[in-house]
Image: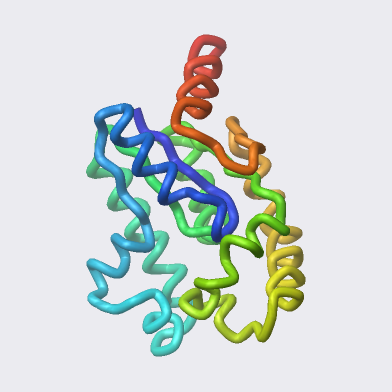
Length: 173
């Protein structure tokens, strides 16, 4: 089984992904962490030194490599991963994609402390600016996220909730 988690920054993709991988007994890969490992530079450094387009191309390359070399895994993507370089088509064609839909006010609460470490949020001066940016970003990305066959819209999606979603989906597919 290949299960891909998509959604906004702060949606809980990495945290939930680790729990799901353990639950299913498959490897867990955080796409951003894999890019950092391969590049030997943080995502922030990549954005600052190489620019977003370089990062997005690297993200697409690493995604395709990870998907090709893991017969089973849980993958936490970056928030923008599905929106560039036909990455969503790769995810939809090779596994089961789950959209973690978390309300923007909850994302703001989760991201306030870590925004400075996130390249696309680092320059925002306060919670209101962060909320505005997240609203704008979600408006652009929603069309991609909505194509996932599975959605967990609870503020916190547990591994058990996702296992039930996957089981119901698999029984009808």
